[in-house]
Length: 73
View 1 (cartoon, rainbow, N blue to C red):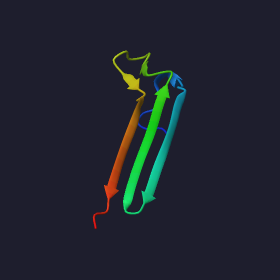
View 2 (view 1 turned 135 degrees about the vertical axis):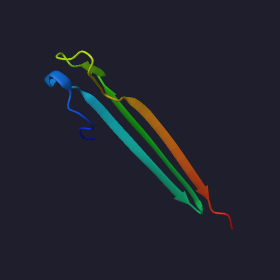
View 3 (view 1 turned 90 degrees about the vertical axis):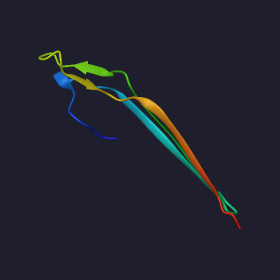
């Protein structure tokens, strides 16, 4: 996952940890798909030293989604 949005203020850096996994299963007319993603950072809010009203946010969180389908005969 690359840079999204503006660059961070004050030439700061952030240690962003990101991982994800997908799972797909098909058997005899049944289908299951699931995914899990996580993104965290040691720096979440960065304030501009030249203008204290400007801030950058590094979005963190976890997502899990799943779907299934059964073929009706």
